[in-house]
Length: 201
Image 1 (spheres, rainbow, N blue to C red):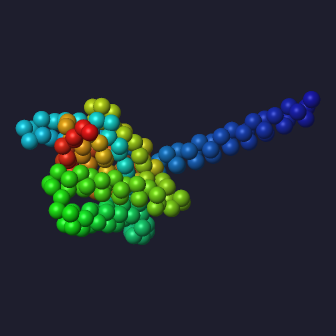
Image 2 (cartoon, rainbow, N blue to C red):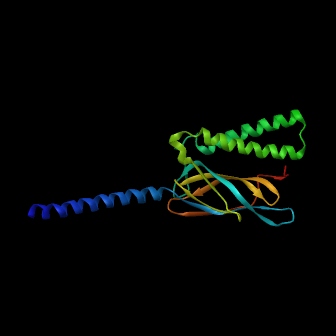
Image 3 (cartoon, rainbow, N blue to C red):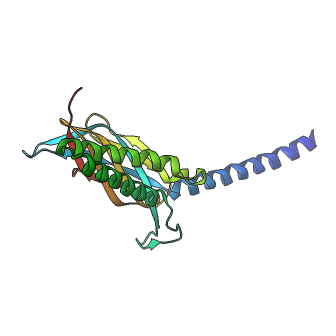
């Protein structure tokens, strides 16, 4: 009985130490990233604000950033952001060549630009190596345009969104979105990269 009474405090102290270590590990992991929230919308020619309705939001990691704001080049030139830019340039170049061959109308050209963005997003998500899957974060806006994302690591990220604003299908793109460890970043994105009048089939 005395032996059991002596062991119990030791076991209890050991368990508490393990819990404390796990807590520190969780806090350390949490501190690596932050949150990104904001609102995505379009502005009509008349100046009306139209929210991005249920738009798909993608974050592609670009480069590490120190707390003082200095960029760190340890990530090389093959981050998810780099992969997306290469895919975007490739897909838009292919669409431009196709347009020139077939003499597309302005509306068809616009729709194919949107398609090029969508292809670049899909290709990027398929191309990012498994050990770098953290470099891609996905989410969506609600019917009023706001979104909130948990970002796994501090750094500079590229935001790409695809959805509908008013009567248009649109894509938004913002490079250099900086997220810092343990902090929240807010973003308002109202300038579309491309917007095309939606035509119901």
